[in-house]
Image 1 (cartoon, one colour):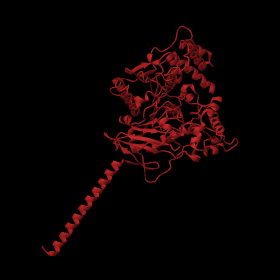
Image 2 (cartoon, rainbow, N blue to C red):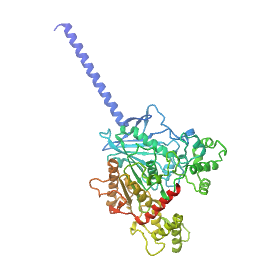
Image 3 (cartoon, one colour):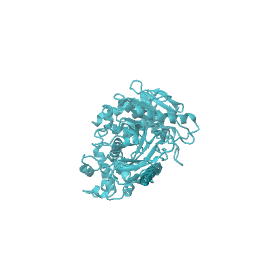
Image 4 (tube, rainbow, N blue to C red):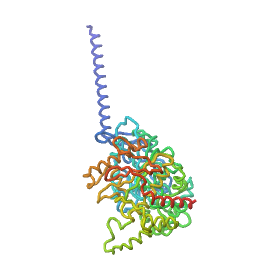
Length: 565
């Protein structure tokens, strides 16, 4: 071979070798980068910028915590409609929960109160596989707490952690959200109404919830969720707000199914306050804070630290509200809630979507409470207990003498016959009345109304132990899969927790809670009033929960709606 040809072949081989090395280095770099990203967690671009979560352990999936879905409602944005999230540069770490919303420490919510901030509009997402191979149903959780406490953290004395991985493992994308609470979320004022583009004030917490649902609609597909299959579910105030949002004109297209755990538009027979009443809540707070009385009250209150607002929501403020029969809670603001929500349900004008409504067996009590009388106090006599119980029934039905007469007979306080439940889980007459008033009868009533326009299912939760009976909030431990030490040794209760998770997620996927291996849960209709008793014997199909007594409550609610017109 000639020297020139040999040199040419050597140069070609050298170039080939260099090219191979370069390709190998490039592949190695890509692998190292991919490994580094997988180790650090997946990155997703959402409204506002990119977020990086973390991978879950086997069998896989990912979680993103502390994703901002709206602008922080601080400074001049305090007591304003929810504003769009502020874009950020770089990658926002989404590997731990964000701050909770401002709230006072009431004991049960210490875990949330200790981490409170006005900058709290964040949500969390659990995906059961990563990357997702198929579109999955989405479940959006709203915590309870009387619209004055709680958070997406959970783990209060009456609730489990709201870590949603166990629910997500049933093949759904889980989202938990936060919203403004107390006077930050549910306070109106004439000046706020005047400055509002919608001429309404007091529904800031509800607007936060709607903004979170809009975020889910716009972004959840990037986490493997189906924006056309979103179930909103909540407990207590979270359930109340859920049912109210179904009656709001602002949620069309954002919710396809709902689950209301111990909550409806009329919790504990309280009425949604009118726009004028919601404004008076703000007037009362301004007076306690010694704000200007002519104009500028809101500007003054916006200038104060959030801690001063919380501190002012104490005894003097509560007394001022009590004197005017006002509360700090969700109400009829005129925009998000333009009509009295129970009337919307009675007319069948809420979203015609599948809904599960439920309550617990001993929600409201009615006796001296789990701890009995206060230390040192003289226990009431049986005659005093009877008179107290009769006075509670009378206070509820006093406007309607015919209903009062029927109610007194129903609870055994007048005449030999009564309609008391023989279910030992329901307790005595006082306890039954407390639960009927606080949750049970409104659940039965709203289920009956909604069943006329969409598939409806009802449950009553009656499982538990002597230490943890089925009181308000107790079903949460079963839904989220965090049974207590005295419950886990019982195989029926551990199985019930799994069955409830399966019912809930089946419903989110299809609008029907039923599935293989589960006792049949019949739809609710007015004729049979079928419901599922989630009990220590497992799921038990039953019908007509407290029908006779709850029919009296339903008649009272009908009359109240007519009177409100």
